Structure formats: C-alpha cells, structure tokens
Image (cartoon, rainbow, N blue to C red; front, side, top):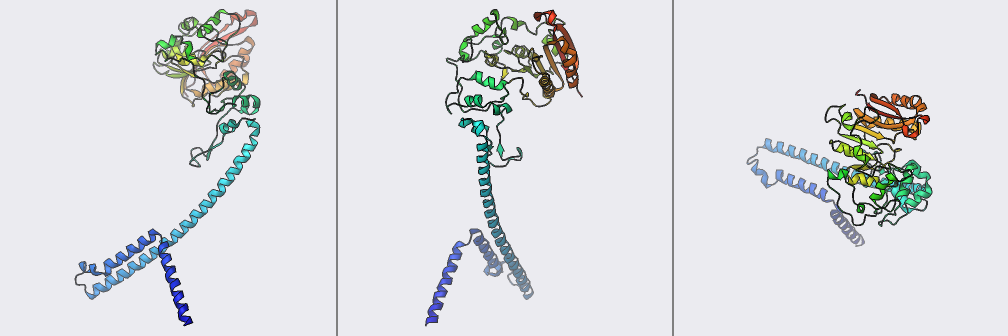
Length: 441
C-alpha cells in the first residue's frame, strides 16, 4: 500500500510537471510542432488517398521511405532550431551584461571628467552642460567615429575663468544679460567661438519690418531695429555724426550711407582705388558669384556686389556700433567673427575674397601669414584676392610682406604702391592695393 501511494504521488508530480512544461513552451516551438503534425497527417492520414487512390506495394514502400526521411529531417531541423534559440538567449544575456558594465564605466569617466572641469566651470553650472561632451542618443556613429559629440570653443576660453564665468552666469530660459561688450572682449582674447547659452537675447522695442530690396541697400534703418544698450550712441543719427567729431572710431564714416560710402569702388583711378567693374572684368562674365569681405564695416562692398548679382558675406565685429545689424538691415549677410578665426568655408569654394584696411601691419607677421594662407585655401582655382589699401612701413614691404605673398603663391594681376599721405611722407608709411589670382593648377 505504501508503495502504491508513493507511485501515485510520483505520477501526479510528473503530470503536473508535464503540464507546466507545456505552458512554458514558446509559441514558435508550438507552431513548428503543429506544422510537423499537419505534414505527417497529410502524408499518412485519410487525405493521402487523393494523391494515391490505389497505391501499389512498391509505391507504398517508396512513400514510406520518403515519409521517414522527411520525419528525420524535420526532427533534425527542430533540434537545430532549439539549439539556436538557446544560444540566442545566452548571447542576449551576455550583451545586456556588457552594456550594463559599459554604461557604468562611462558614467564613472563622465563623473571624473566633470570633476576635472571644475576649474573651467568656475561656479557656472551651465558652462559644463554647454561644453559637453554630449552622448549621442543612438550610440556610436561611424560618421563621427565616436558615441559622443563635443561643443567647439576657443582654446583661450579655458584660461579666462573669471570673464567666462561672468558670461555664462544667467537665468536658464530667461533673458540673456546685455553683455555684448564682454562677449566681444572674450572673442578678441581668443575665446572664439563662444560657448552657446540657453537664454533669449533682448529684442528691440517697437520693431518694424525691414525695408525691402533693393531700396534697403542704401536706406538707413529705423532706430527701433536696434537694442542700443551696449553702445555709446543711441541712434543711427549719432553714428552718422561721428564723422564730424574729433577722436578715433572704428570705421568712422561707415554709417553715413549717403556720404563717402555711396562712392566707394565706383571709379578706378589707375592707382590705389580699383573699381568693382574693372575687377570683375578680369574674369569671364558671371564667374564671380560668391565671396567674402574681411572686416567689411557696414557692408558697402557687399551692397555694390549685390547690385551686380554677386553674393558677398561680410565679416565684422560690433565695436561700439551695430555693424552686423546694419549689414543685415541692408539685406546682406553679416558674419560675427574676428580676424583670428579660421574662415568657416570649405576649401576651393569662393570666387573672390576682399579686404580693405583690416589686413595690415598691425597684425603680427606670423598670424598674418596664417590668415593669408587661409584666404588661399577658401578661394577656388582662378579665384581673386583683392587686397585693398594694405598699409605698412616702407622698410617692411620688401623685407616682410612681399616674401610672404610670394611664398603663398598668388599670381599678381594688378599691383600698386603709394605713400600714405595722411600719416606724413616723413614716416614712410605705404599703401598697397593688389589684385591677385589663385593659380589654376
């Protein structure tokens, strides 16, 4: 009796275990088993008479052999699928474990990097977020070659702790501080590009829509187009009147669009003053289309070129005047960068580069050579470099600047040197105006 009770209990456990294992079978395996049973039933059940109404013994033996072979193949396939399923589960578990471990290591490295950047944060929480690095949401990118992206900032930003901390101190999501002067001081000290910020700049009060082209090219915009807080002048008329006042201002006559600006680059005197039409005539019609004006003041060179269907981007700073704003109000394209910055254009892309007064002997020789090589880089083969009223001392011309230009490799199309009379003949200060071409080969 004891043995029978024990056997019954053991039988119930087996049935329960079998019942449990049935419920645990994956749906994919159940589907394979059902398919196998249907296949067997088709070849061995009542339907088989549809294919063999009166099979001979020889045919029956052949069918039996084929069926047995099919059963064996199905059984082998079923076993292989089970093995693959088991290996796949093991691989998934391994990958999950590796991802968890990798994430923990990255978090540790990120925390260590944040601690190392404490000297850069100098009290500003948003600076660390601005600098990154930022993890890519979809992981490693073959195009970038990394799983994170870095925010570019000027190398000198890292040593300007106090000023950078001041620049990055603001209310996130609020209005940006009126710190244009601070921003440009950072740029001129090499902190360029500046880190991005999460705030909104102040907008002009009572702003109105700009004047449409082409009238906008020579129209002084309304004062309501500018936030004047950062400037000594609080109106365009004040900026225009600077030309009549003593003192030194950056581009003193630039804001008077109906004065000297109106006559620039119209007449060619055969000397220092080249005319735009004569310069364009050195190339086939329509082949000068896009270019850059380095330190282009309020954009008058770009305006003259725009009248001739040439698009010029004007780089300039807002040195105690809204230069970038006026350029944009004229319907032209300003670019707020300093002369120290690498030009943000790809190699061999521009038809013309122009610079008046900005590229001169106030720039250290080595730095100037880097700038001129960068001009060469962005010009396409056959592109023009118009060096307009470059000034230097007579002793520097053949000793320093001519060798630099010769090393870079421009071809001279026009070259004119004159004494800078407003500095006095006795000081031997020279002006150079040159039209040069990047070689075709």
